[in-house]
Image 1 (cartoon, rainbow, N blue to C red):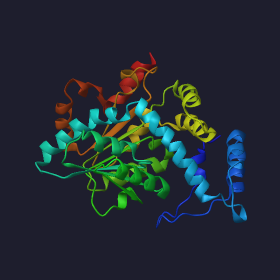
Image 2 (cartoon, helix red, strand yellow; image 1 turned 90 degrees about the vertical axis):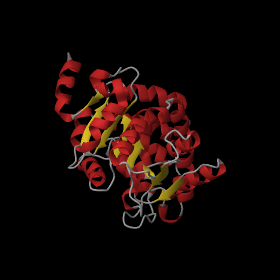
Image 3 (spheres, one colour; image 1 turned 30 degrees about the horizontal axis):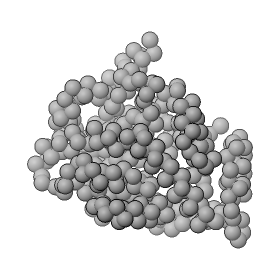
Length: 315
C-alpha cells in the first residue's frame, strides 16, 4: 500500500505554466479506495463538486487555507523558526565569510504554504537585513493568503506563485519544512539535483524524522491539534512517508554539493525528535560552517560516517 496524502490529490497544476487543472472527485475517491484507504476516500467523497463532478476549486482552496492555518499553529508550537535559524545563522556566516560579498543573500522557501517561516524570519529579523526572504509555492491560493498576511503584518518579504527553480533571481540558500516526504523515489534525487545545478550555495531542508515513534506521535498529536479530518489524515501519512537518514543523505549527495545530516538517529532523542534537517553546501563552505557552529558541529554527519552511526544506534 502506498501512502497517499489527500492534499496532494485534490489539486493539480500544469507543470509548465502553473495553470490550475480540474480534478474529478470520483477519480480521487477511486484512487484512494484502490490504495486501500477507505477513510481518506470518505473524506474526499464529502467535498463539494461543480459541473461534471469536478471538485469545487474555491471550496478546496478554503479547506487548504484552513488546514495550513492549523499547520502554522503547530509550527509555532514546535518552534520551527528557531530550529531553522539555529542552522541558518552559522550557514550565512560561512557564506558571508567565504564569498566576501556584501549581499543581498536570497533565501527561497520551497513549498512555503502560508509563508509562516518566511513571515516569522521577516518579523524577527533573525537573519539580518542583508537577507532577502522569498516564499514560493505551486498553490496560488496559499501564496495569495501568504502575501495578504505579510502585507497586513507590514513585513519585508515576498511570495511567488510558481516553480522555485525558475525565479528570475538566483537563490543563495534554498530551505523548506515538511516538503521532502512529498518526493518519492527518483523525484527526491531530482529535487536535490535541481538545487545543485543552480547557482545556490547551500540548502537546508527540515522534514519529519523517520523514527519508529513518528507515526504514533503524529497520530496522537494531529488528533489533538487538527480540527479537520483531512489534516488529521495527512499528518499521519506524512510521518509514514518520511525518508530515512540513509535515503536523505544518498539523495542529497548531488554533484557539486556536500550533503550533511544534522542530528542523525544516534545523536537524537526519539521521544523528542519530530523534525530533522538535511543540508547541502558547496564543498568550500563545510569548514567555515563547522567553525561557525562551534560545538554543535559534532552533530553534523556526512555519508561516509552515517553507517557507523546507524550501527551504534542499532545496538
